[in-house]
Image 1 (tube, rainbow, N blue to C red):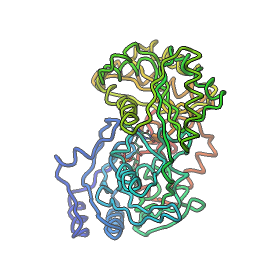
Image 2 (image 1 turned 45 degrees about the vertical axis):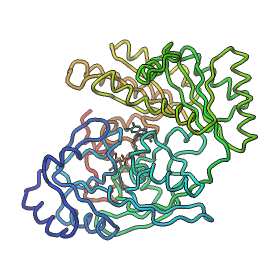
Image 3 (image 1 turned 90 degrees about the vertical axis):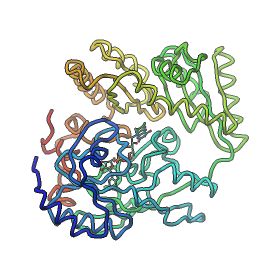
Length: 459
Ligand SMILES: Cc1cc2nc3c(=O)[nH]c(=O)nc-3n(C[C@H](O)[C@H](O)[C@H](O)COP(=O)(O)OP(=O)(O)OC[C@H]3O[C@@H](n4cnc5c(N)ncnc54)[C@H](O)[C@@H]3O)c2cc1C
């Protein structure tokens, strides 16, 4: 790792006069992590508050050859915003405005640091919503969502972030601004994890809030039975907008966390939402009610806003509830072809059990995206070695089954060494060429995706 001298930092601060730059080591601690718990190293955090400061910050770092990590809220699950090299962080936190809203065009323009949940609040007041809804929406930023091409429960019906990006404005390593729509170079920026450009603002498509929404929790049985029930339901014409799977171990964990005695039987469950006009949602309710009556299965339905929120709280409590089962959470968000999901859950649990690991599986199963969580302890070397062996076996299984390493969390540091499992040599070379064209000096977020391609990884 190249370490730059303190005199360079002092020069940077002078050149950015008027912009807040913090280099106090105690303060920096909070910026060395993301949700993976991995720790990096950074020398300063810059807090631009507008477009002009953002550009000056980028140009200032580049002029001094300092690697830069753009950071939103740091909720990433692949180490994307963890500064691997001796770096400077440019935080988008204070660039968090809604710049314009156009009801007729159904679009909103926002700065990158706006928190997804704040955007949703703003839009609700206008009778609209923004479909991408990562479970971290109360904290994660629109810039981070775009950089990771975030998904979420609603992705089953609405698709992921890319579909809603109409235009992006970003800063190139030299501080120059670029602007492009999804048919241009902007398409490369979405999902590029801060390695090709630093997003300043985005024009996003939004949709009118549907007339009616109903939320359901269906108690399934064993993990496999729950998966099979889902296929049966879809075969009957059930068309949810949200379609989530929660395995039996996870539901038990959430039930204990929230003190929900009635769920402690620990049956794998399916979490659904339907939406549309009042008549459409009632039709859908009819299908699922009839199905559950026939099978004698327990269904919890929620129509009123506060009841729906209660069910959503259960879904959103999965992550905090798991935190009680281990100090370190290894969370892999694999995606598989739908036909493989049912076999995959059992197989993955067996792979974990063979290595004496405590594994929990849930996720956006409607679009094939399963979150495989191992609750472990970073301080126990031998257990971590077994976990690494499990992750290796998991990725090899996924690649062999025609799946992808990440449904939504990105490659970052955690998966960079596995890219050759899912991309051919030609594809990797092409991607490397794009990086060279856009960031020839490799100043943007070094040590991530592209170091997997060039062999900078540690596998
Ligand atoms: C409890 C929990 C639940 C989650 N649920 C989901 C989920 O349902 N769906 C999902 O997709 N993800 C989920 N995530 C992962 C994470 O929240 C998303 O990846 C999110 O998009 C990251 O946003 P952020 O603002 O925290 O970005 P950060 O973590 O700060 O950064 C993530 C990456 O984006 C880059 N980046 C950030 N801002 C910019 C910018 N302005 N320009 C260029 N690059 C930038 C960073 O360099 C980094 O590579 C979850 C995380 C947690 C902790």
